[in-house]
Length: 381
Image 1: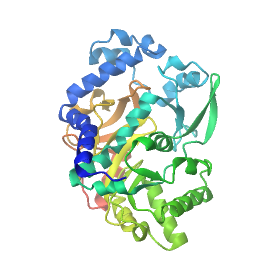
Image 2: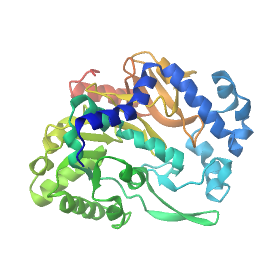
Image 3: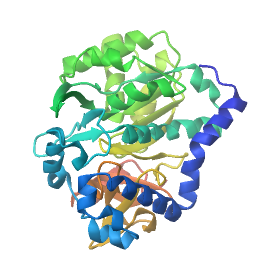
Image 4: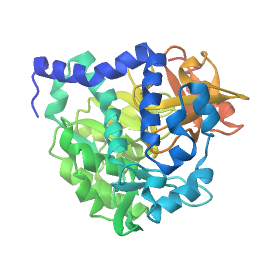
């Protein structure tokens, strides 16, 4: 779609201002988020069991609500899946997201609600801020190369209803594409029609669909999962003897799912897709928690949407209280999950900048340091 710079500037500013204001004053933003979350938690049995309506401070919140892992909340989620919706949710789920990774060999199931989905739209802040700061409004005249996972893999019964489940990136694209200023090609429904298989043949079919649908299009944006974008580039070269840069002039790639997108994987991405700007999205099946704001190669939290804590040693502190160079395990509070330890290890880079360096594992800092050394990045933003 065409968007003139004056109109575009006004629309993007309205979309981005809450994020920038929250980053400028994270303490106030987080207080507001906690207040709203507690109001929502009082509408669930889990929240009332933990006296959400009687909490007046962060200290009270930490005392009343324990930090939980997926294993610990899974029995509650299973009861929600059996029909006890208001045990954990105050809205009917519109879908269930499954993880690409595994917990004890099985995918995690996370309910997605209308409020939760509306928050995921803000992952577009990375692309929007790029356009706003560079005046590249011609980006909206192109299309987004949709390499997302299927939004529908199967159905499950929740009480008396049959609800679809699939991958969060596909569900997000399917539900919000009508509200974004750039069209995604192929349409998510076309990807879903190919089925939810994960074999090489399944992915070759999806990649061929993307190639056929986008071959004559003006692709200006590539969004999705970093390993999938790399895999698609290799597929094009193997099957069609071209790389994406030979077909399109991509302006920006907004990618997530792995550490090192702007360091370890950047050379391969630019070799395949050309000199596109690369912006990292930090999120998971449980939510979209931050995105890269500028050329500095780290993401900036959505302080106006989620509540962020970290476990640093034996201490729990707010994410925005972390010192540069400090590491900690991320604890997020979302509309669905209060004080959920997501399992990611976060490194503070100073000011509002953070990196997820991997899963919470004793070897993760060593692997991160090795990758920084091998890419000659050495911790630089």
